[in-house]
Picture (cartoon, rainbow, N blue to C red):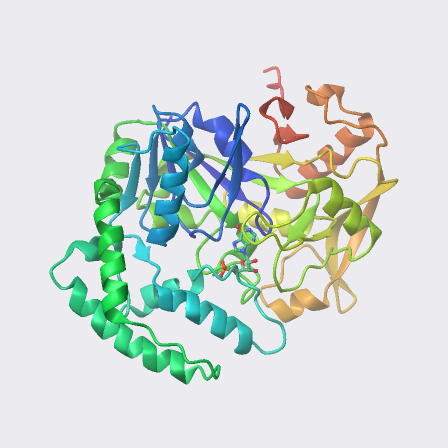
Length: 432
Ligand code: IMP
């Protein structure tokens, strides 16, 4: 049964890492295929807590091959830091980690551009990037002239490429007119990146060829999406998005594996909605409800520690991203968080100029103008974090799950009520 894919259906931070971790034991290979160190997940194994950004959590299982595929943008210093931190704590990181020679490399100028451009070049609202150089690196990838792939760091002309690019980037950075004197030193950068290249060399490989062989041989592959589908560069809430295809459409482009090998897509949603950074968020609750969710769900960014914006479940958005991503089943995470609210609201439609629609608008200005149409459901007062079977959840919580499933149009297969592995429940198969 070749490939399973895990995709966040909201604006990221849907607790995908937990589901990936659970599924990893049933897979031979785990693949990150888009984004970079803008993602972050916390993995708890035994009494140890690890924070990972780019390395798949499969790294904790020696039998599992971890692959960072070509669609990723990679900061060498960042990934070496992750590797060193794991090794220092006794985790084996060797042949079990492969990095694509096609992955694009993040350089110091990308961090500078991220900082300078998001600060001054957006009209009105900033995107609020994670400042990890992600957008500028993808911009250079698409622009090609200033792009460097991991495999390029081992080629005869690497030094000359760096000198050429640094020359141009110093002009560009000066032209961004921040009033700051940003001057990049080509020699210093070359020497630093040559050291990184040597250390990363044992991991660098043609992962496209490796993955194609693997799926053709019938290996079980797990594709781990980063961010969420509403942040997809093409289909998300542009321009308040990340720079990669974070919905299900990104799997093939980022990994090189044709979509026909993906046999199951699991769409991950929270029982409510959150967003970090700028951009419209129709169901946002900037009030006591939002605060209740933030406090109980510890809704602060893993990478940046920014408080997340919180709001009601938006079924219009989730239905759109589930369809877009080819989702088969849903995993509803953090269902314990809205416990104790007297009532819960689900956005079932948008009102636009007096007209009701369940279509998700393609332009961000139209999304800003929508008025959410809510259905109100009674909340449950009981704590549910100890519940271990979906059938044992309070009836009101089950009704809430059923309504989400109905509105999004996909069955709920997994429900999570806490960070521990045991706090995960699976729908019992329907009798045939
Ligand atoms: P960038 O990916 O750093 O360019 O950030 C672009 C937008 O995506 C910002 O609003 C970020 O807050 C958001 N973003 C990027 N990565 C994540 C993530 O892993 N979780 C949630 N939001 C993210």
